[in-house]
Image (cartoon, rainbow, N blue to C red):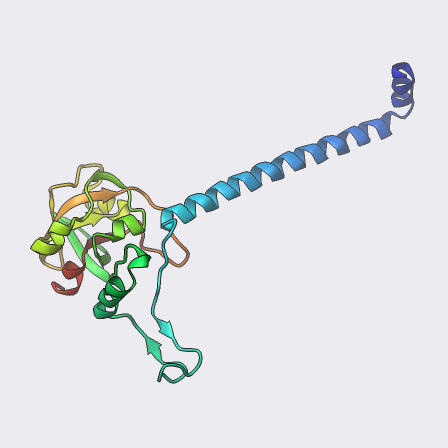
Length: 212
């Protein structure tokens, strides 16, 4: 049988070579597709966990239909009172935090100035959004109650202001107000439409809303 197969392969050399190449190409393509699928699945899983595995983000929008006394197309926004009401009346949600972003803020450290985004949150936001630190600490409830001016820097903003030097403990000017850096975030996979995840400073809610 082996001799007959060898004889056939030699007599039909071109056909044998083309068949072998086709089979090899098919196997290689299959392996590449499986590897690509596994890699894509891991990337998507990492992206979901980077956003927050059990997080729900509610953003401002407009009504599509007339409902609740609102006309169609009316703007709907959350207020701080709405967030506090949800925290009190819907304990099954677990953790909740507002997120207020203000763009085009001037950050300065020594001679270095960088324009970036200032984000105000509650300390619970760190657990909700899986905010992991490369150095220092996250915002604490004590920062919230004592109204201390502290902030956490994202990686790109930290690099723009400090380069490779440590940032924790240093004072950064934000629109002429002084904030102490208490932490630096690890680089984060950005969720769709989020262009500032790695170029922002995060402060407690009062720091963003009351001291601007």
